[in-house]
Length: 219
Image 1 (cartoon, rainbow, N blue to C red):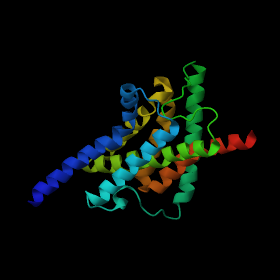
Image 2: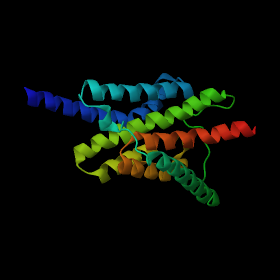
Image 3: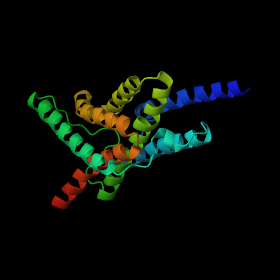
Image 4: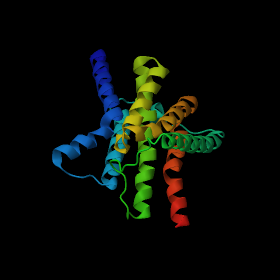
């Protein structure tokens, strides 16, 4: 009886892994089928539903603690590492944009969930911060940890989650997605190294929000 229950939990975990990896892409067929245009706030709320739902799944169905998906207390070095990771991502993204721009390949597009012009700053920050928190829970937290357990390979888990993380930015165009490649690699490496969401969430939120705040202050 116990083996049957364990097998059922394993199947549910595989379903949850797929949902963590590809759940954010479901907004695309949803808009196509319904004809609705989701706002940035709509997508942000959906991201929270996915992330919180997976956390509840971990505790209620898998009967595991949230520490199993990266909710671990940071140590004294993690704050400095978070700042360093943020700066490294900003630098790498800037370099990638510059390289793409030199070849005339850089695309600009308003991807799914991107706040339109005129959106109040607090909503823009909410959308940006939401991406930083929820995407890390989904990709570096749940998907990477569970894929690593299923495949017994940190490399496979890291490559798969980083690749899909880049793909969810398809709204920025195929070439535009390349801008996110350095961030995906750095965030994945940082999580595998530190094994705490504190570092990757902190850096991701900073990458998304600090430029917005600086831009607002300079306006």
